[in-house]
Length: 271
Image (cartoon, rainbow, N blue to C red; front, side):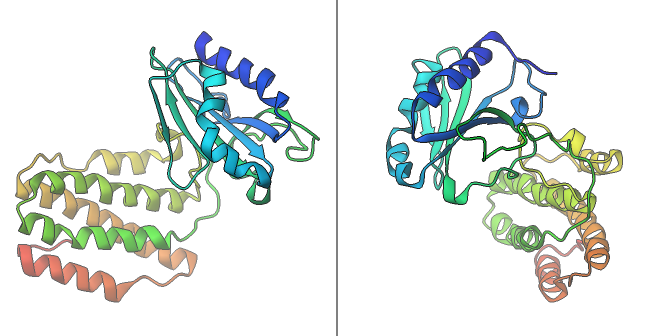
């Protein structure tokens, strides 16, 4: 079981002792490495709260004050847009996240692995900690949004290299690769809900080999195109098979239009 280091443990101990003193906080729990018992000295501490709906406005304005009760002084706090909370960094680079969830929208199964520190009335986590599935394969599913985003981003390669934006073109390889990763997880029925810096355990050996074989690319247009061609061929082969397997329509019209757009501009095929 991962235990991290003393600084992380001190934050957790403060969270368990101090946060329940605030009656507006209904539960305190950990996700990420501490939720899955994989913590090490490089881990963040991901502290999550459940709060009453009438307390949301206060926590939106003061979440960083709550965070500093756990960490002490920080050199950076940064709210995550659209969420109640954000991240904090201390002078010795301890990274702690603090997020508050309104009771009306709280889902105890939102994260893969939860360590419960406090549950005020015992009803939010009636069974205690939520064990992680650890990326074990489940039922394959269809990641429609990722499929559409993949071909949208891929088609924009014409615009990017047409403007000779080579740095943006290199960055774009990572963007389309990430959609391929999402497709691979869907192949295995794995829903990635935590552990942003851990991926190996969620992929099969064959999938990892496919990703690691993506051609290296700097800022030469030919290299950027070659990397995108490889990723696209992987995506089409896997995507069409997954669509058939899950009984979902493959967006053939959009795909064909995108491939024709790329061929017309670059004079090479991507499928």
